[in-house]
Every structure is written in structure tokens, then in C-alpha cells.
Length: 245
Image (tube, rainbow, N blue to C red; front, side, top):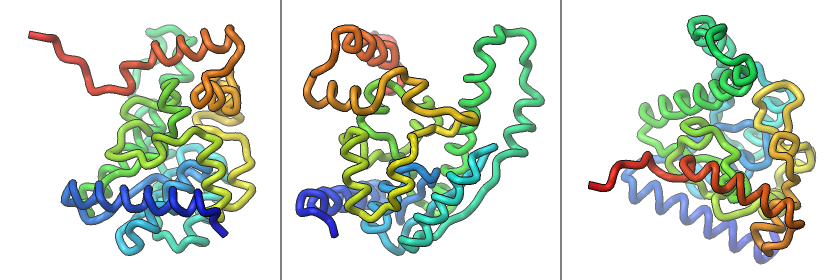
């Protein structure tokens, strides 16, 4: 059963989603379902908001089998219609035509991995265009603040209903919405490569980051690290800059 606070938050976020769709003169919403806690919460909120006008898209791209199973579990439990689009071959085709030997080898892994969320963005907007839907993102405040998302990839969406919630708040909402425990408790991962986890890549735990964002409390070295991350990713959180004339 939802707590009073979580029920109120869920209602408010579902209402906001409906308002955004209406104000944009769209018919519904489409979102990627990765099997993670954030996309699961976003999907359930969208189902509440527009039960007859939602589409989840599962887009494996050399992805974990478990992630797909978790995405399908949420779709089944909450009766969310889904399309499955396997992007392995598309990814391979693009990699084959891109030059690789002319550039620094150290940048290759991240550059190639970021192709995956950008292919997913293209796929979601295909469905959005076909259905006259908005694309819903699952980014949370913790990720958005430090730039832990792919520009024009998972950051390329129309609305982000979880954008004001830190990771710990998303997890709490997930528990109260009935998201399966195994999804809530598994290590968060963008699924960019095998064994990749958010916290290992960030070099900071979500608990540490959330506490700093909410309370301003952290060791000095951590404050400096987070401050640097926030500064370096400023361009990812705004529209492209234009000169002041």
C-alpha cells in the first residue's frame, strides 16, 4: 500500500504528465523500459496518467538478459503495452562504417557505448512521431545534476517526471508503487557495457550524492569532486548556446 506521502507524490506526478501531454496537443506517451528502477517508476506513473495511451519500448543493444526480463516483468505486472526493438545489428552496422584507428584509443569505449542510448532515442522518437506521443525520460535529479546521462541519448526526451527526485526518493517511490524488489535493489547501471555500474563510473555513491544535494553535507574532497562534475556538464543541461548579439 502506498504511504500517504508517496500516494500524493504519485498523483501529482501523474497529473503533471497528463497536463504536459495535453498542453503539447499530443495523444499519449512513449518511454524506454530498461529494467532499471527509474524507468520502471516512470512507466508506472505514465500508466497511471494515461492508462490507454502509453507505449513502453524495450530496446536491447547487447544488453543484459536480466534487464530485459525485469522490463518485461514490470510491463506484465502493470499491464503496460510494449514493443521490443533489438538494436544489436543497427549498432554493429554503424560501428563498421565509423573510422576508429585514426583517433585516440582511450576514447573509443565511451564513444561507442554512447551510441547505444542515442539509437534508443531515435527509436523512441520514431514511435512518438507515428503515434503523436511525447517521449518520457526517466532521468532523476541526482543524474541530471552531475551530467550522468548521454547528451541527445537518454537526455533527448520531451519531459522528465522524475527530474526533481534524487535517487533515494525514486527508490522509495518505487517501493510504494509495487516495483519488484529485485529491480529496486540491483546495482544501478546505464547498461553501456558488461559489468558497468553507475556508482563505479561516477566515483561517488548515490547515498553520498543525494545527501549532498539535499542537505549540502559531504567531505570537502567530495564537495570539490561533485562541484567539478556539475560545472563540467553544464552544457548538457541547457539548449545549445547562441552568441549574444
